[in-house]
Length: 491
Image 1 (cartoon, helix red, strand yellow):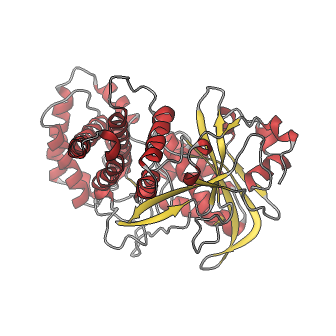
Image 2 (cartoon, helix red, strand yellow; image 1 turned 180 degrees about the vertical axis):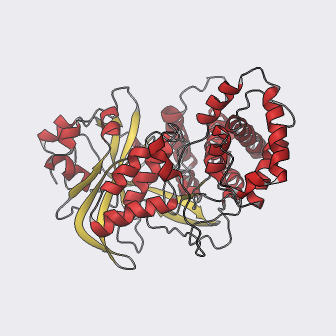
Image 3 (cartoon, helix red, strand yellow; image 1 turned 45 degrees about the vertical axis):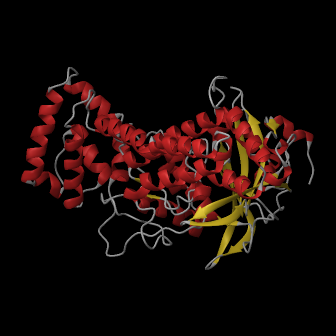
């Protein structure tokens, strides 16, 4: 591996603050080179915001960095260690097929991780090959960018390259590497790892680093570690409410897939719900619905409880008092989540102010949607534009009675119907990355080498609140099928 001077022209401005933490937190190693990398997609706007030169990124030197064949100036590649509760079972984990190149300092002085995913074996690979296949990497690119345009905190995708080397899953598939951008990759599982196998001094070092990087506004008079816990809880309450408001189902809400920064991460068997049903599960490995749509707020609270357990030694010298402080903080999550969700649901219905009956109004609508198998996204889209046709729900007496109550509710606020509709347009996306459309784009790309389907799809997803005519075809739900949609942990 070399560090070519020409790579500096690309705009890499890397630091390695995480690598200055205790050495037990990570392993220093380079990505495994690949034979013939090819750039498949580059996120030009993201690259520019990072201070990178798009044309240089598309050059052989730029592609070599995305492939792990070249190390940019200032990088210190590491694989991070962490642990996690996977479907409730605690285990030692780590970056099994990812390498953190470093932290890019952007023109706005933000610090973000640059990680290669699918870059080869690490000490944490266990029995894995350290590689990734093209389909799942493109899937993460599509979904993560869709989440970003929907206004949901998320890791983002900078580029996908093919490696020129096959990977073996159920079949032979083209290998690929995704370049992921994140506020950081510190997970609940990172704290679990240090809490289990590190010292209290190492735990304090991790917590102090986290505070400095993500929560610098702590006052000197406050308990900084209680502040950390409370702020992480607040961010997760906001994040999960945003998931629920658009019908997003993560699929694997293990503690290693919950990051401290409050971003959505690790787009494995995730998907968006079509027909509204709180019991919806897409993941092929979630046999008992642990991470079903309706369970996501409860599982977030469970994960946060595991996080709170790790920092109990930092909260107070008296363990009983420390435990009580942690319990009190965690008990705030349901209220915080519910307030965020209720505010979002009011906006989806064009409601600006608060009334006690609002929750009942919302619940009645959701119950009807479940009863009549209504499409989640398109129900709110239809209400936004008063196009109440093409759904069984809208022809029922139950809906007519509900609609009358809703119209009466809108009439009791000072804002006009026009302002209510504008609020709804900004709160109800015209489209989501429908599962069948995602699969259509991936099939064309992987099987036919045709990336135009994905590019067109990404284009309409780039402004989901535009409500433009070109989005209409992508807003249609899939045709009825006797086979339930299933996703797999392939990323």
